[in-house]
Amino acid sequence: MQNFSDKFSKLYFDFIDELRANSVNAKEILLTEKFGNYPDSATDAQKLAFVGQFQDLIQDLVMFADEEILEKLRSLGFANRTLRWMVNIENIRFELDKLAEIEGLMIARVYSLKAIQLHLDTKFKTSMLEDFELTEIHNKVEKNKLSREFEKLWARRIYRTERNIAIKLDPYEVSMNLLFDQISLNEGVDEAAAKKLFLTLAKGDTSMLISLLGKFGCIGISERQVHLEMFPLLKMIMKDVEMLSEVDYHKKKESNYDADYTKYRISRVKKIFKK
Image 1 (cartoon, helix red, strand yellow):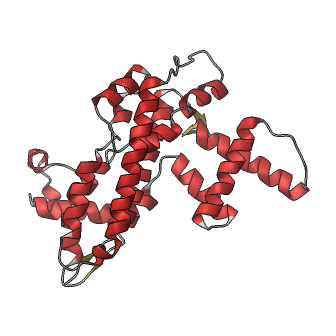
Image 2: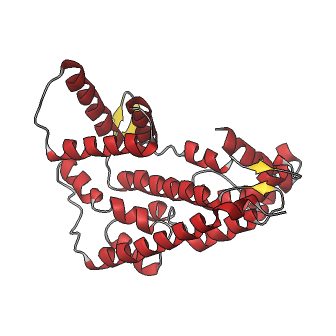
Image 3: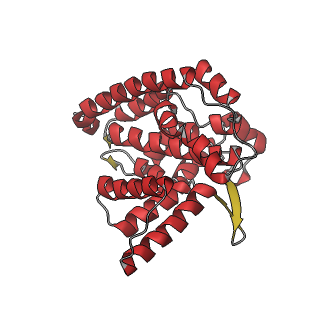
């Protein structure tokens, strides 16, 4: 039987080539550009401008980190808890390719890899905002200032639209409105859906991306077996979810699963996809 994923193999490998080329350029910029020191006593806008320098670079490097890249980011103030979201693409490919070889499992690796890249990129950037103390308490809930800024921008956007008011915007608001328009266009959704998508990711919630990995088809293989096979991949990329190794599992003596590590792995993956 020809595996379903074969249909998307060219897209998958072309995407990997594109990612690799982008990472080479991004690494050169990161290692040669002078970014200056983080402005501790600056305004929030200046702090956001500092971290904003890394937005595109991180997207291109999040699956291609080497020791040079990691050392450079550490020197710029990035904490290890943020750098943990940089997962090597070869390790990800190994797990995706293993899944693609399973007879009867229908999974498009290219879309899975795109979802994983955006997941890791989003998690890195929201953790980055915490590294540089760009969070605040709003209605007794801690939020990063990017999501709060976007909420306020959205409110102003609606106000201007409803009242047909022409107001000169500062450069930051102009760029954010352009980003918002781009999301609407690229995702093919209306403004309300685009706003929800952006704010969800801005808060670091990538559950909708991870759920895409659970959109597979299977013939002659059970969903439970697929969940079991997906555990290593999810364990690799879900750094903020407890997914124990077999050694750690037995040390913890998870009585809920009768010391059955297989049941534990299936249950963890099933729970992730249900979120």
